[in-house]
Length: 211
Ligand SMILES: C[S@@+](CC[C@H](N)C(=O)[O-])C[C@H]1O[C@@H](n2cnc3c(N)ncnc32)[C@H](O)[C@@H]1O
Image (tube, helix red, strand yellow):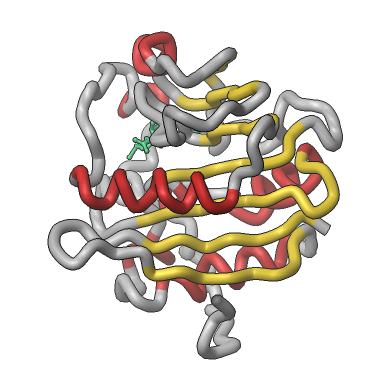
């Protein structure tokens, strides 16, 4: 589904400042074996993945934790998780490989060009302070026409989210993500889906294809 309006967001000079400017490794040092959205929203994420991730794909779960929400009954060739907490990632049964890597210190991704078919970022995009650099990198490691799936809800670690994210309403955040995708010049076919269940946490997806 295309965006209903072609709005882009003007970024202020402090757009990527955060209440807690301390190193992310300190915030994520202690593992959180919790779910960040409710069951209905997790099921909605899984359905998006079922619909958009091809069978046998090579998949990168960026900003991953102890759960990745991929459908259990679909075979993917390789799933790599990148996140901040080793104990969480080690417990994630869907990952074939994982690594700890701070994208806010190092937006460069330690992967080869065209290594993946799909990249997913679930309820985490709001913590990136160099979102355009990270998106350029995702464009590099995805094959041409590879798919990026960014899902988000209305829950947030407020002290770690960017000013840009916090300053927008739940409904306008899709335009912020669209703005970053356009600025990265690495994606086309940018779509938005409201997959929110009828009750509980909302769930939105922005999808784009690598150019
Ligand atoms: C709200 S959790 C979501 C985790 C997981 N994607 C999920 O769906 O449950 C935010 C995740 O973002 C990751 N994260 C936060 N800051 C990061 C950074 N600077 N670099 C890489 N990952 C980061 C953390 O490791 C954490 O797992």
